[in-house]
Length: 521
Image (cartoon, rainbow, N blue to C red; front, side, top):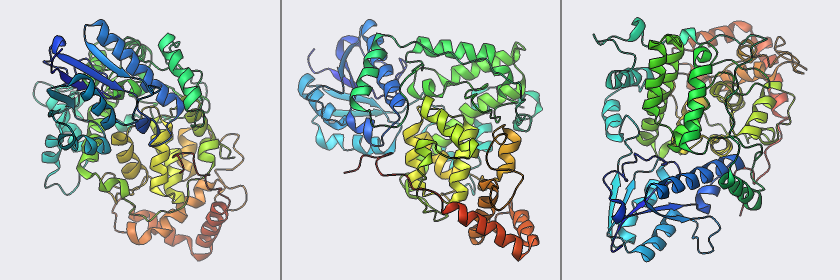
């Protein structure tokens, strides 16, 4: 093959419909896929996360070869592996002498910066194509955001509904007469509630080889490696989607905010890893959910909630990320500086809610969105944990976490570090919220009904400590004005009890040892 087109495919671009493949002739194209140290270790990702990505990449390469494509696949242990995308592209140029490098735009800022240097490094044409697996391009999001005082996700979501026609009537109004049914999706869990389990997939030979590689190369990374049950190929991801639509979508809506000790998945789809890898088409999933509603197999509130998470929230955070990078990564509006506690890695805490959320994170590289936001994230917010440490943790521990989706959620939604560009108020809560939406408080050493003093739920005092120390920054927010009125009515003695209880607890937090999230030089 003389002067072919070289098509690098990144680890989260495992889609046959990828823009860089479209229109390429198989007899003139070489696909380059690379397992590189830089991606596996820029944070010390959960062992299951690396195994999932590498296994999915290897399965995708096998599918491409079977379909007649020529794939140049660089494994992690290749003795000549340079450890970076740029280094491996340089070696591939030496091997293949391509006339053009055609690549779909990456999902992450730091990779984009590296690719933008390629024209100066390589003596061939570089063609960077948009990732049209997303509904909203970078340009479209910038145009939507331009001139707006606030970037409200709900307004963006409605534009995506109009664009796709999902859950829209012929007259241009939303199905059911309302755009959003979130108010119907806040049911607390029932004590005897047991959701149908999400399918787990037995590792095949390829995955077993990757698991062995993880044991050899990443033994000091966080998390359990086995049992490993993630879908690693499109056919498995489709089976997982089928199971969700047939057994769990119906009750997904009402119980999407519910939490039960030891029940890690409940009615959640468990499809985010497959969507973010490229194994599933997000718009197709939304259309399948819509059809379930039309066929009376799932209620509107469940279907709308699922669709909103994909074409609303997922698309929105991606646009928000690219609009605000690179500054978003450094944002710390509330000047939070406390180290991340060691128990975020070990789970060694008497707070039953946090211990369970860390447990499922360690065992499965997963926790659902309310566990991430209102337990783990809420604690980080009200305890004043350093945003950089929290961002590293979320990015490292979850199998579906890529910076484009993790950073806006953590900086904006969880920590309010962006100063309210994404969220209209901090998502701070006392123990009452966790008690309402979970069974965590039952059997906990701490009493959620006790506000201060020995044995009181730490969330209660930390909540008021957070509100008090950030009063100058937050008092102008119209959504939380009444909170400060309540605080003022307590009187100085009661306020002092809350603040002293919080300080006593904060003094007990053991900072995480170095080396959990990043390799220490």
